[in-house]
Amino acid sequence: MFEKTDLVMRARTKIYHLDCFRCSACGKQLLPGGRVRAQRRRPLLPLRLRREGKPLRKERREGKTTRVRTVLNEKQLHTLRTCYAANCRPDALMKEQLVEMTGLSPRVIRVWFQNKRCKDKKRSLLMKQMQQEKVWEEKQMALQGITGVPMVASSPIRHDGAPMGVGMGGPLDVTAYQPPWKSLTEFALTHDLDRLDPSTPQYQQLVQQ
Amino acid sequence: MFEKTDLVMRARTKIYHLDCFRCSACGKQLLPGGRVRAQRRRPLLPLRLRREGKPLRKERREGKTTRVRTVLNEKQLHTLRTCYAANCRPDALMKEQLVEMTGLSPRVIRVWFQNKRCKDKKRSLLMKQMQQEKVWEEKQMALQGITGVPMVASSPIRHDGAPMGVGMGGPLDVTAYQPPWKSLTEFALTHDLDRLDPSTPQYQQLVQQ
DNA sequence: AAGATTAGATCAGG
DNA sequence: GTCTGATCTAATCT
Image 1 (cartoon, chains in turn yellow, red, purple, blue):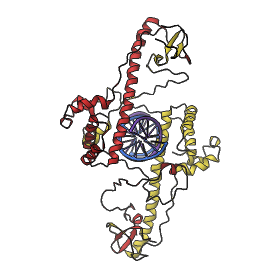
Image 2 (cartoon, protein in one colour):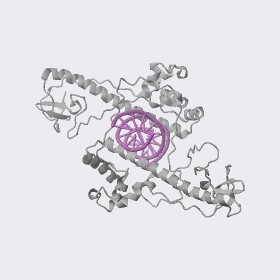
Image 3 (cartoon, protein in one colour):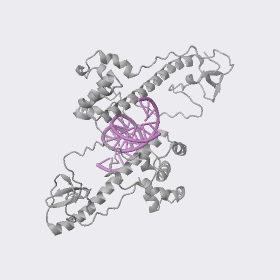
Image 4 (cartoon, helix red, strand yellow):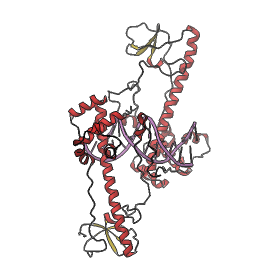
């Protein structure tokens, strides 16, 4: 039953194999110092059944469809945003610190950063595109005034040896958009974020998701 | 204004930078042909260059830093799953056939098999763990009925010279889990998978990711 | 190649 | 409807 080299856990007067020492309620293995967080693992049916017009099956796994959505409070969000401003890709150590500081699970920490990066990227692309379109529109307005000729698209060709200086004027000067995690890092590193007054516009802009 | 290597679009008598060639109504960039499906062939910059906040040259090969995510349709997935069921590690020849059958690139084929193997392995481990917890739970229920003593966790200690035969009964007999690519191979080889009725539970279990 | 992580899309709760 | 935490998975990195 027990070998001399087995790792065991002692509880009261009894001794258990490490692997046998489990939560009597859920069966999860108990580890010293580890918090038992009931992160419910809910198997979801494959979603690709929806593709190709397949009728989505209504059978929903006997009501286990409820997704547990964590609600982050202001303090947790502040901590996350501050850290994100300094580094949008925290390493394991930093994540561990965040787990401790926020009381959230590592999983929630990871997901939050994933979504945050994704959101910021989308926003930056959208911003860039809008700016470019705005510049373009202005140029277009000016051009229309001169030529009066609407453009029609054709296939792109390489421009070799064609006459220079046709039509477009100087190159576009589109301001490059800097991803938040770059533009904010310097700010984050030069300020004590925990002491920032959250009511300042500076701060609002910084931590705004 | 224009360089000899610039990609340009020609419209009527005018020439535009590719990036300047946009819909005059909405400002969106106009592209020839319908699909932009840029199945990237060239390796893009290593991620670390982007992360390290390095000056990262503006060049960047027309951007293209965004990941192109392939969406597999049902037919392609069916082909891949069927092949996977027969052999989770296809050789070069089989991969070549899959490329032809699915119209996907060899790279996508390879990545799909990599991810599929990884997923299945993870699932098998999870399953094994759950089974173990289930067995444990049952044993625990029985034990609780006898002793009525709830367990409390403490730090693990080495078990040297402690009295034997305390509390736990015989060793757990947990059924070993067989990886899908082994348990399914036989099935795959003894059935015509392409003629399987996808509505049978047998098939569903087989191809379920 | 395996294993871990990321990115992009989508789902779903509030 | 928007927002955002959660999930899935192709793509990537190590």
